[in-house]
Image (cartoon, rainbow, N blue to C red):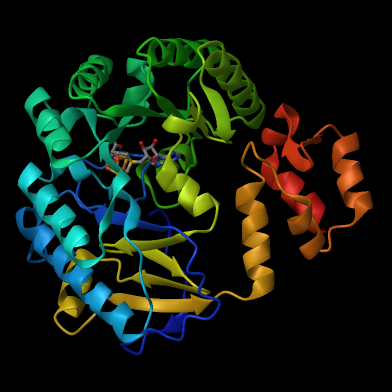
Length: 402
Ligand SMILES: C[S@@+](CC[C@H](N)C(=O)[O-])C[C@H]1O[C@@H](n2cnc3c(N)ncnc32)[C@H](O)[C@@H]1O
Ligand code: SF4
């Protein structure tokens, strides 16, 4: 989870009342594994490179996670909240592939015993291509993991160097082969817009990623996060600032090349081969279903309450001795919730439905203007961003709300 946590209301040891709880929503679990072998220069995720962080050992960290899972289920029951079996489980990080199969298995068992996991659940794990081999992926598949998301980022060795990645492009190809052999669905993560990356370099990276025939692709525009090594290098002039026009050209090329290989956008940064290959987990977030985030710094959302855990693994583990490791919470009022829905739903190929537009009191004039500028088009009654709109989605949101 990038960036600092919000401030919120202080946690008094038990859940506040969950108003507007909707029993029809699906439930999704996120499990944060806060360890990496090396920190990449651009990344500000909540992750640590030592095997032991202030007394918290990576090799034992699954115990803390399973304690939290059990406490969470008991606490929800005591608030008379009927949780549902999870529709998805997502192991994210950090680098969850630094956990052994036995650790993953114990966490899955904890989720299954305390909440339940649906028979047809999507079980995803993020992989760093440096940390896996054929046997590991086979073992994951045997545990029920059915989807992997592999951090490829780029296939240009120069760009990988700027990003401080330690893997070679060939490692990604091996990981994809092994994952496919194990019967896992494969998603690749790419980043575009690194300093020095030309349009040609991006074209080659895309070509190489697509030639592996992934089921799914996530491609993110590089965010230069404050406080990272990359931000310091840019401010010292070692590297140039990302160029917005070049970013927009790279997005257009991304859409062109993905659609030529049968991967279509269904969320601004996400491309799939159709219904069975979209990320059910991320769609759960984007459609405001309920999610419980386990592990340091993880966020959860149930009813109209968003809450988040202590960020540092040591603070997280210490507070588990006294109860849930929650740091703070906020109550989301109807208006905030509607605006958040707009921010998320506008990014999706289903578009925004007229009901949301009406609830947000967006005027016909504001909407028509966006259509006239070529940012929006009407599709089956919903309003969907055009390519031009997708290249500046945040601006379109502002135009609609102001
Ligand atoms: C937790 S990482 C994926 C797994 C593994 N840790 C790895 O990097 O190989 C999640 C993804 O977030 C994306 N990401 C991280 N920091 C980013 C940034 N500053 N800008 C854009 N994307 C970023 C990367 O594409 C990365 O693959
Ligand atoms: S391996 Fe992934 S989570 Fe770890 S520092 Fe690099 S991008 Fe961030």
